[in-house]
Image (cartoon, rainbow, N blue to C red; front, side, top):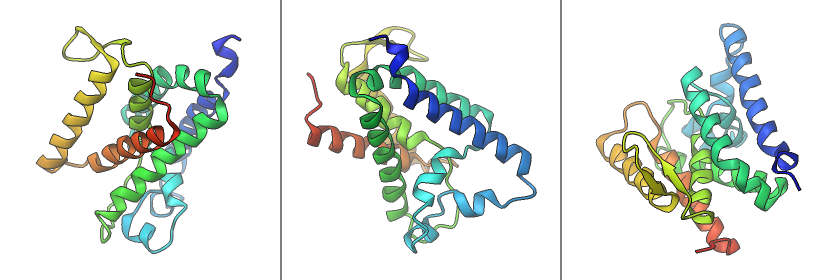
Length: 194
């Protein structure tokens, strides 16, 4: 089976994210997209549960979208091929929705919108590191090959340190939430191969 034949899930996610971003750009002043579809923790905890899915398809700018889709494509291809599209989708949405829940749980009164697929994408990164731990990656700024399992640790520690520093306008807790939910799910499914 050719790996390209099994990439429908990945392709559909990327196309959906790009289309939603174009809609954001075209209708920014006409439709209150962020107010209804971004993750607003206070509203989410009050029952606006659709935000736990819809926020993953909104992005704060072209670079935000591009980096998320690049990482999703780079690490998601092998996972979808190995797991199949249905399991790939399930895992992706568990990580993304779990990230929304964890972020909202610790920010219950926040009305600041959160957007982006990063929680789900961090889950994908973790799954790649756990499934293909010895695959060599080159991460900036190290520029030396490093095992995928160590790269995941590096990203996780960096996210935790950024969280402790306050995080600026990035939802680092959502990134960590995606990592945590991904880890728990993979352990439960016994997909860890090393």
